[in-house]
Structure formats: C-alpha cells, structure tokens
Image 1 (cartoon, rainbow, N blue to C red):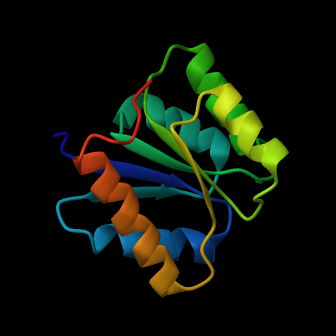
Image 2: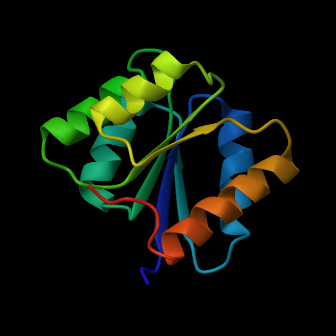
Amino acid sequence: MTKLASVMIVDDNPRCLEFMTLAFSAQGGVTVAGELRPAIALERIRTEKPDLVLLDVKMPEIDGFTVLSVLRGEGNPVPVVMCSGSALQKDVDRAYATGCSGYVEKPATLEDYRALAGAVVEYWRRGELPNH
C-alpha cells in the first residue's frame, strides 16, 4: 500500500482551487499545495516533487495537456489526475494518450469535491492509481 503524502493542485480558478484544497486537506495525512498559474506550477512540481498532481485541463497561457506533456517529455513520472469540466471523450482520450493516471470530471459542490478527494486518496492508498 502506498501512502499519499503530498498533492499539488493546479487550477486557474481560485474558487475551484480553494474547494479542492479544502477537500484534500480534510482527508488527513495529506499535505496540499495549490497553484493558479500553470507555468509556475511546472517549476513547483519539479522542485517540490509532490506525490500526486491534480491538474485542470482548461487554463489560459498553458493548458493542462501541455503541462502534462512537458512533464512526461522531461521524464517526470509523477502521477497526474486530470480534472476538467469537460467529459468529452476526445479530451479523456487525449489526456490518457499524453500520460495521465486518471481523468475526473470537475465537481459542482464542496461536498462533491470532498467525495472526489476521498476517492482519489482511497485509490492511491490502495495502490490502484497508476504510476508512470
């Protein structure tokens, strides 16, 4: 069983970032870092080396697909769960083709965020979230 210790959440929407941070912080034993700017997030992922990255898909400047592509191009194996308001199959397929470990639809309420965080942490602790 793998212990999830640190999560970096990357989302350009301050409210989504706040809800996701609260949701993961409530899981216990999880250190949460958040970043609104994808370019800064790339640097932080490189230096802070989180155990898991939760990455928004649609962001200005650099989208989540590009962030993931850069990480994989550098050989960074950090597990990345893409989180998006889009459930379009083409987006899901593109995320997995780029090297994500999971793809989830962005929740609507704080309770939904908590349920999502609980599920991700539980899968991780059971060793069911794929590593790259």
